[in-house]
Length: 220
Image (cartoon, rainbow, N blue to C red):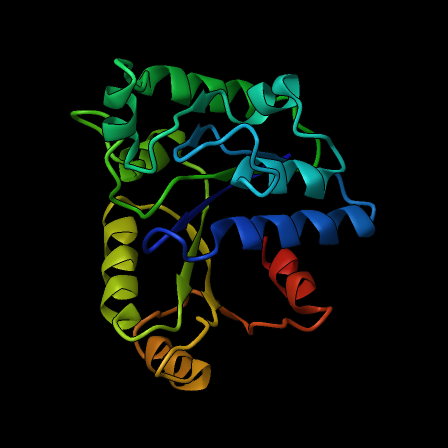
């Protein structure tokens, strides 16, 4: 068993796109894989394109309440950070419960378990904890997802620095091509490579080649 935490430089960068692509690739190759997205905000049970529904579809499962509970037990309606979304419903995020939920799933899962975070590295979960604290508590390797938009260089290098300061192993930096970006994907990769050190960088164009997720899966 191996477990990987997917985080990002911000919201709507493409974590779920990357996770779903890895799931489909591994399943087609006959490799066992499963996924968790414990925390979801902006959740609408009638939306067949929610992040949790997309991940379940990649696994070949229906977004039934039971299946949603298995991968995303903390679901909130407001499209806000988890601490704010929970407060809107007079609820709170049980940080220790999130850690325990993940740890209980890691041990018995054959093959690879992907754990997708929420938003970016420093998104608050409650009054004291961020996604970075979540990753540090699990102590599993990290996949950092970013984009090619203007401004991504600072966001990405800041996120890398935060992860490295917590001594978290970074398996790869995945650069999703941002639609409509004024900076080319190639230029973004060139500059990031100057600062990423030994961290492998994987580019995902808007229409990735069939073997793109295979190259990424090989790094995991």
